[in-house]
Image (cartoon, rainbow, N blue to C red; front, side, top):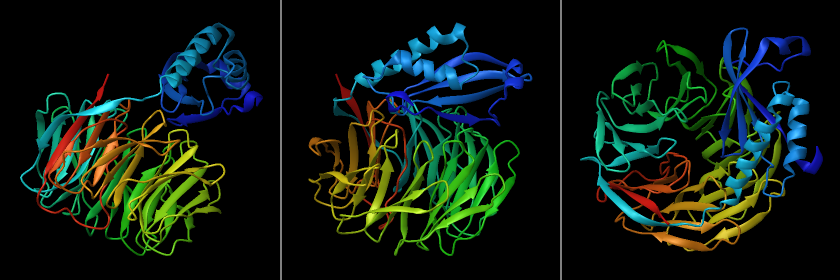
Length: 466
């Protein structure tokens, strides 16, 4: 493709690439813009049913020739007719403008919340960062207003520790909680009402995730299985059986068609989300898995392990691609940036590293923490990294140079998780007792190595300085 730009078409709600004979039955209703990663969502009607698909512009840059790119889009997308060309051109230009607005802000301490009477387990932001949730050893999950620090709802009903919590982003109207009581509960983010209690696991629930369409939620458990649950009916859809030890990492791919699970049995398995069929097993790590995830276009899988390495795999057939080395101790977390071009890793050795997904070479090493790093995440723009450490600080880093731009202080205990909101202007950090907030898409995290200690039980909000 000209200028080397890839057009990737994601599809939802059963979309099928139309033949020429079907085009007449499809009518474009509206455009939706997605800034991170760059893309245009198309809402269209087919045979009376409203559907959605996306045009992912992962290679878009400030220097991209907009006219040539729009021409390419029209060639491959039948819904983009001549009358829609100017609209598409304006949308691409808006995406370009957003890419030029690189985040180089500082953050200040906005709020400190002592959220629960017992230690916290996990924290998660909704897409906008307007509210967040906390799980706790006190058997509850609480929903908070980010701006005011007001407690909006206390979600009660679990009979043991509430360990895993998440929103159904990007919608944000539902919350799922996974507990040591072996159940998962689905809640209304608006009212705090419990819609369903999902029962079936035989041991503690360690991780959970909604699919992108928010039609199902998947749970991973200490009982070595994962389960998929229907949000509407409350029924179990399928059980994923194949691991030999607890499942501690679980997520869907961008389309929602596949689920990836990571286990303490040293393996990662990819499954069909609807049937539960095992697609392939990734074998190669020599110790427990700490994280496993797809990149945005679902071409690569990244796995991190306590064996001090990360591995890249071809997501099409599960074949091994490369091993990312350099850390001197266990890797606790890893992630892609939104475009899938960069990889970041965090380790017990107190350093983080950035790798190129294309060359598999280490671009930069982030040094400065005085303790292990348990969480790492990119901001949406991809030019900043956020890390949380046992040294009681979170840090903001320049991705390309590895320079520490800011140290976020204030906690009195080990930071187990931290995240940006979708805009990258709020950051949230969590210790066993406190939560502090900053910015980017919420991702909950937990220390896989040591349980929370009593002491600092709060959360803090850092807001962007203008």
